[in-house]
Image (cartoon, rainbow, N blue to C red; front, side):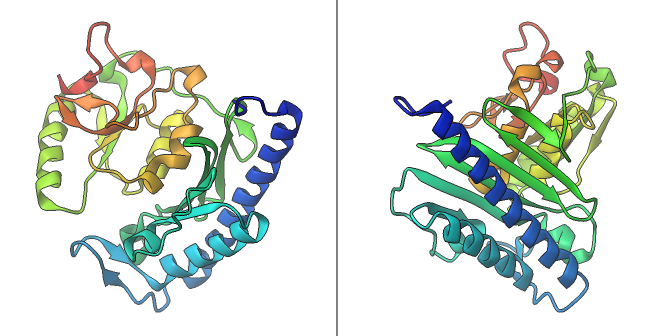
Length: 277
C-alpha cells in the first residue's frame, strides 16, 4: 500500500527500483558466498559458541550496503553484522533496509548447502519489498507488497495440506541453551501430531519453503528482524499465509514465538496455538 497521499503510479515505479536493487544486492552477495565457500572463512563466535560469524558474512554485508546506499544514499541500513558491532544506521529515515548477509552461517561454515541472503525494505515500518536468494540452488524468492510472491519469476502458493497429520513442519533452535530447551519442549509436543519435523537451519529459507508449499508450517523462538523481514512478506497472506506480528507473533503453548503457518493448518477454536496444544 502506498503511503497516504502518495502518487500511486510514482510509488509503483519506485517499488520496481527498490526490487531491482534488492535483487542486485542479493545476487552480488550470493556470488561472494559461492566464490568463498570452502576457503579461509575466518570463523569467529559472537554471543555463544553456536553463534558464528565469518569473513564472508562481513564481505557480503559490505557489498549489499554498497549497492543499496549507492542507489539510495538517504536510506537507513540495518544489517546483522553492523548491528552486532554497534554500527547500524539509526538516522530515523523513512526508508530502512533490513539485511541478513548469510542466514544460516553455521551451515555455511560447515559446507552444509542450506543458507541464503535476505534483503528487505521497509517504508515507515512496513516491509514492502522482500528478496531471499538461495545461491546453492539458484532459487530467488521475491515479493512486493500487494503484488504477490514469486520463485524464479513464477507465482508461488502455500500447500493444500488440510490436516496436521499430513503436515511437514519445520523449526529452528536459538543460540542460547535456555531458549533451545524451551523450544525442545514445543518440539516434543508438535512431533507426535504431524507427519514430520525438519530443522534445516536458515529461518528465511524455512519461511520461503512454507510460502511455496514445500513445508506446511514453521516456528522458531527468539528470531531477529533480519531473520524474517523479507521472508514473511514472501509468505502470501492472500493465499492463506499467516505472518508473525511485531509483538511476538504466533504463540505455541503460550511461549513467544515466530511462526509462518498457512491458515488451513489452524484448527477452528485453536486460539492460534496449532499443533502445540
